[in-house]
Image (cartoon, rainbow, N blue to C red; front, side, top):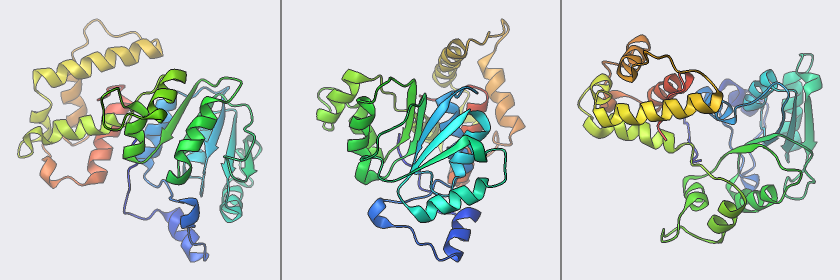
Length: 275
């Protein structure tokens, strides 16, 4: 999954800096700040109330808190004791305190506990060894939603003949089904900029676009065991979504990253995806 870098500083990030805590480049530390990206990752994980989640590199806990709202327990592995203190302080005295177990140390050298789902915003330095560690983990887990830098993510899903096809590609695809989830992001942006001077509403009226969205929506409903209304009309659904959220008359050339993330989130909330 390609990494989205957001320039705006979150309140939590600002608070950390005020307290004199600088991020350690040696650990590849970067805080996942945009709530739309956090929500999208959690939505993809399809979490259940009985799940135990393994989170790698929780940082200041922006995603951790969201996970704690939805699952039975979160095992968060963090190498930096300073961030561990911030994370524990964040849940202190809340109902989430007893649901959070923090593992302090290097995840590559740590014996992983039992978990159903792994969710992580991965530092580049440990991406490859962590993937191999995860693939060999027993007992089997249900799924992992991992955010990587773009080129690394492309290596995971590369096919024979691709220039990025390598040992990592072969081993990963041998032992797991791998999907490039934020291909969804590329799909959204490609549709929007296919006619960058036209409105967003106009860009989503093309037949091929609507057919693709309807197919993905039906797959989503099937996976979630949700019945599709007999009178379902993808064109009406998309038009209503864009109008309701104020995107229909916007033009891609004047939209910033947060606008596109907001648009993606609107579609995700309705179970309509771009992969």
